Image (cartoon, rainbow, N blue to C red; front, side, top):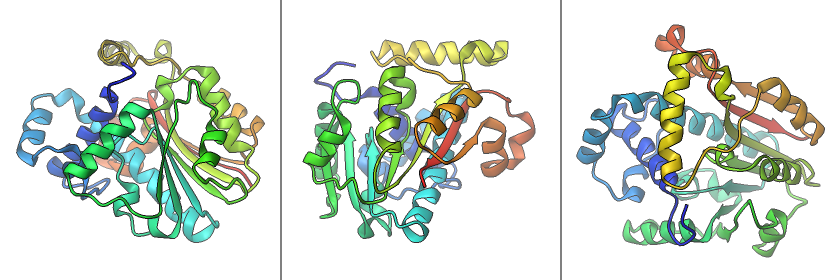
Length: 280
């Protein structure tokens, strides 16, 4: 990705969220600001999505991971004392601008400076108000010290914190991923995180592998290649070593059974996962 340009994959994820509102009426995940923040009209979004039926699976996965994450943050705020929310790689995420519980917490949006500047322009153009509880923290997870940047923005490491980390992990190096998880797992006030990842392409069946390679080539062409993959059992061990005492990992079939059960029988065993992990 060009350092002075917003993330193309952040735009694509936002388009999937908006298309889900139009084509499936937000059945899995409702986001009333998805179209407005993207700056697109419903007809154009629908036509583009319908012209590319192969994107449907990714659209459903993005909706499912968002639903899973926001269900977890609901419980975190209401049941487990979460008082801060950090959105890592925020892109055009709208949690802070529409969620009824966002007013109860301090929200920190973390992203690369260029993408964050683009989002702030989109918010202004869409006339979406920035809440007083929100802080923007420009950070590059590959280069910057996350905790130092957050604390500079007013973050309190003694408060229990929930981290959204959606659509980011595959684009980071293993070093940056482990460093970020290490920061989250070591927070004195306790922490929770929801993130997604993909299994190694070599574990996929031929048709799924071919589809993966085509998508990988597409994001690489944007300058945002997929860099990291994980085996579920190995990742679980890593998370526990980094201080997480609770881990829930939903693979493709578990996600389908929960969010689109009519298609569960046709879902591949391997592919994209969504994880919730928490410290005590």
